[in-house]
Length: 191
Ligand code: IMP
Image (tube, rainbow, N blue to C red; front, side, top):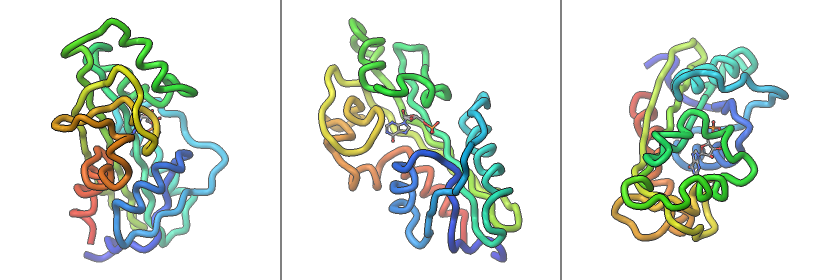
C-alpha cells in the first residue's frame, strides 16, 4: 500500500527502554528516538490520546519521509481501583517498585491482580494513522525478583508463570509483553 512501507521510524518518547524494546519488536523498522527537548504533557484521559499526542508532536518535527511512533503504557492494579493506569508515568517516578509495594502492603488475593496496557500509534509520512493495542495480565509479587526489563517488571508475575517479568527476561518480553502484542497488531496493518 502506498505510503505504508516503513523505513526509519522516529519514536516520540524520552524512555530509552521503549525504543530498545520496539526495535526488537518491529523487525525491519529502524527506530530512532526523536531529537526533542520537550514533549507534550501526558494529559489525555486514555492511553490512546497520549500515544496520539506524542505521535502528532513527533510528526511536526521528524523528517518528512520518516514514520513517527507514539506509545503510551501503564499498569492497572485491582487493589488500587485500576490505578495508577494512565497516570503510571507520574506515579512512583523514582522508585516504581517501592511505590507500588507500599500501596499494596496488606493487600492479598485478587487485590494484587494487575495488567499492563500498551497503546501504539504510528503516523506515516502522508499522515495515515495506524494503531495497535496490547495487554498482559498477571499479579503483583510480594518482593522484587530479577534484573531485566524496567519499571514494575521485578514485581509483575504474568498469568501462567511463577517468575517475574524481570526474571523471565527481555527475550520473553519480546514474545509476550503488552508492548509486543501492540507492536504485532500494528505491524500486521503496515506494509
Ligand atoms: P509512559 O508510557 O512513558 O507514560 O510510561 C508508563 C509507565 O508505566 C512507565 O514509566 C512504567 O512505570 C510503566 N510501564 C509501562 N510499560 C512497562 C513495562 O513494560 N514494564 C514495566 N513498567 C512499565
